[in-house]
Image (cartoon, rainbow, N blue to C red; front, side, top):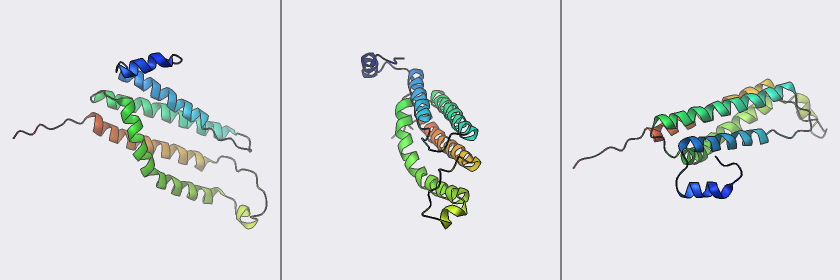
Amino acid sequence: MYLWKVDRLVADLQSNQLTAKEEFKYLLISSVSITALSIPIETAPATDLSYIGFFGTLLITIFSIYYSYNINASGDNKDFIKRSICLSVPITIRLLPIVILLLLIDDIINTPSSYYENPDQDFPIMPVSVTDIALEWVLTVIYFAYFCIKLKAVALYKPSLISE
């Protein structure tokens, strides 16, 4: 695995020398990095609850990527990264309307009535709530469950031989 020598990685990719396990490591590192960098910047201070939410999501992501890698490995063990990246796009697009709807409902539930009664007044950013964290975890699990189902269908696919 190359972390600095990009040209060597390019050469290995061009000659198709990366193993599925090496591809798994790249996906795991990039996903963990994305998760770590996605901590929202808020004016309200981070709380213990927000850190619990972050680390919970991080653990769900690590476990889910490891699990999906094993699903692919138990099948034909080919093209893990390509499959992961390609499947993530339509899955994300399909889940996006559900995510938006649930976030709106969560916002309505967690917004105090004073926010609506005094629309001109400045209010501080609301801290993370238990329902925010639960929703984030549930949505992350739903995404990866759907992803794993589709990945398994690809990895275990055996073309049928039709004799004429």
